[in-house]
Image 1: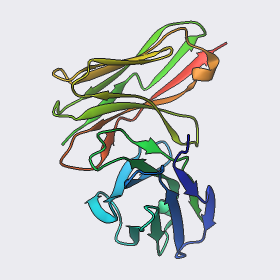
Image 2 (image 1 turned 90 degrees about the vertical axis):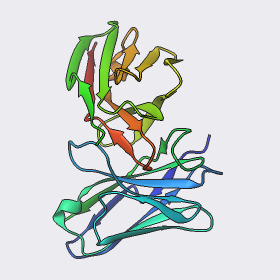
Image 3 (image 1 turned 180 degrees about the vertical axis):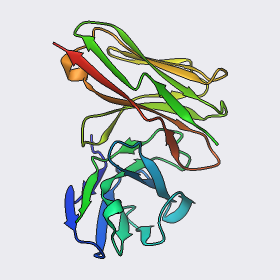
Image 4 (image 1 turned 120 degrees about the vertical axis):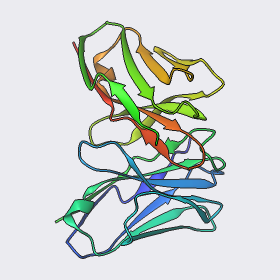
Length: 114
Length: 112
């Protein structure tokens, strides 16, 4: 079965650079969520989109932005990167807003800021 | 504010043992609870999803129960194997927000 696809798997950037992370949800899933997991931490919710509209916002820095496109894939744009942005970034998708059917997570993008 | 606690934080058992991981949450008004497995540096694999109207879910050697009124869930792993070694995360979906609230996980080590 198709899963949530994230790219790239690994990314190394320097401070103050920009990074773009991509997420392709499970086919027919219309809701996408982004989470950040720092070393030894539990995942923290950043932002979500339902039917291409932002549906909720968590602890996402102003330096980050995201959108969901017409094909339901999503991109997380991160600017002015800081060392503290080094983390695993997960995308998840679900059918319908509200996570009622449960979340399916991708394998994540490991971002390292040097 | 919903808080999710997992006990114990770490657990080491010999192969073949049956074990129970605990998860508690402070606000019982949840829509569902999901158990995930995470291998080091890897993604989150969904193990079991329990809707608020359900009492338990089973998948193979795994059984998860939910007592919404008392704010508790348990994940039972039967006949543990070294391949079960991972961190197990419990997460609740509450509604009114799109986010899952995670516990900090239980790191399980199954020794051969």
